[in-house]
Image (cartoon, rainbow, N blue to C red; front, top):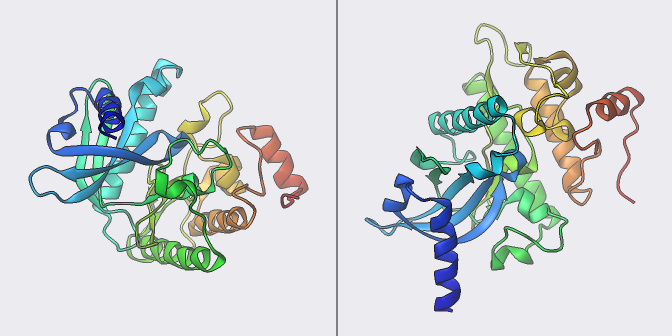
Length: 282
């Protein structure tokens, strides 16, 4: 057991060389993967000074080496923006940040409240269950737990729209995490936008870049979870978040598979939306 633990500790330390967060926390086992392209790895951890439990979120920059230089730099800024936005928003159904983002040459890392796993890890169809903890490997959600979780996400969105005048615009399984008490928490604020406070949130249009096939998919909105006006027109409202919530609901009752299911194919998205060829998994 000690040998396994030491190997794991060495692996995690290798992902965080020089990152200041390693001076604050003892990092333990991986409990999931989440975020854009599942780039964020989640690790259970404990703060050395107080023994407070936490979850460490880590992105290894080497995972972005295949990106063109400008897009790689842009992606890092998008990830940083998501964390800085998350830090400013306080709500029981939104992930709480304990330690701000720390950056080194090799990684980005920050600490949040302790979590159990991520929703996309639970829904992963890969039989290898890569990135899941022993406890979450056999974990599945009952219909009651799903309904309860969706109510919690609706509460988070209502708070964002009505109190913060903010659109989320990235409501995917990769943006949702679950704590040990079964409470669903919203994260993933990389594309979040502030709406016009002089208008009702449901009527306030916000401009954003349309989807571009020449850019890396992870730098843009998820085609399988975004509304047509967001992808095709670059105009979004609170209704865009509700459209994404509807897609998430369908995915939860469709073995984790989006009813759009177009991968990263922009032209397939346009065809599917136009022809409305939306089917559930057999």
